[in-house]
Image 1 (cartoon, rainbow, N blue to C red):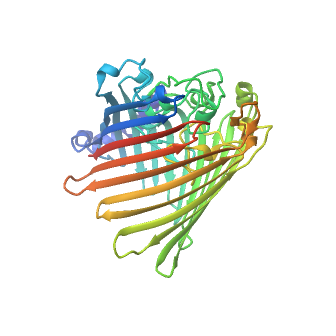
Image 2: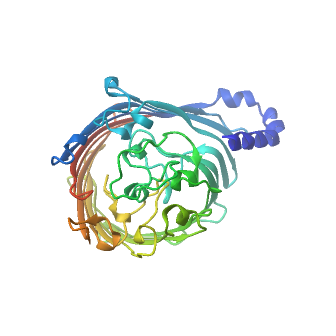
Image 3: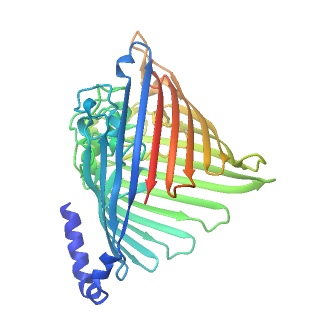
Length: 461
């Protein structure tokens, strides 16, 4: 927070004379109020006596609310508050295991905080944003899957001087986990490979299913290394190039340098062509993680070393009865290395889970020695009402050391997820989106099956 205030003071000082000459008062008078109201209901029921005690549900309302000033010589200021509030308050208090934690803050409590506080400057083809902000990048992102998203504190520069090319560079020193983190256990085998880290927890708990729900401090901005492994570092630097200069082809390369932790390379290519009247998109992705420094080894006893390859094909097919009819299939494969952390599985502590094969809940595609595939379809039933159906299957090899049999030997583990997603963009109320979701998992954690339903309303303003 001190870095934000210092940066704001420096930028304000350099621009004060210019801003005063262009009427700073009018910049605030012409500011725009913006945000999103969100209502979210979730209900999860486990199969089998082992997990029946953990059946849980919750209902919360909240969202994000703030304003952004008009630009004065390219410079704007923005602030945004984030809030989630439980409706069935007699179940609140942090001790009821049947209250789903993924809609709330620490200890299943309502929480409100300043999630964005930034200066945004644009000059010709360059944009600079510094402060607390939302970012969506492949390996660090909002993961906006529940009430409140992950947020980041740092500086991001975007430049488009080169035709058909976007260059991105930035550095982030802090982040705050959103409410979805509270579905995991701090430093568990599963959380560290599903987008969440230690949340400031300085020990390690590398079990497949964790030892109970973690107490992530939702909305509290902590150092990037502290959030990831419980040990502070100099933050994460990122540079990316997105190139669209070849017709029908989009290429992107991202490199994340987490100081004294690891380096992550993400590559993706998407090529679109027409086969008869069918618009076809072929995509490929590659993720490589290498160790940097000794921090990860000091915490977990092993260095990072992982890779993933994925491929996807999507067909947009003209159908007389429905609009926007898509069919897709995807496949991914992770490496294996028993000398590395997670035996060669990916380490994903900052909300970045870009894999082509990912269920709504199931994120086993990042585990070592895993082959996974997914098929799905989406189409508009009527204008504004879209249905998405998908099935994902994961084969986790024995080298992942994810599943032990009764004799204590590591075995291959199979899991799957079936889900449907119905989204209605209401034409009667502009900017209102209603969504219903059904998720059916099998063997997500060994021996664990559950059914989950969600009802979500988003109103943007």
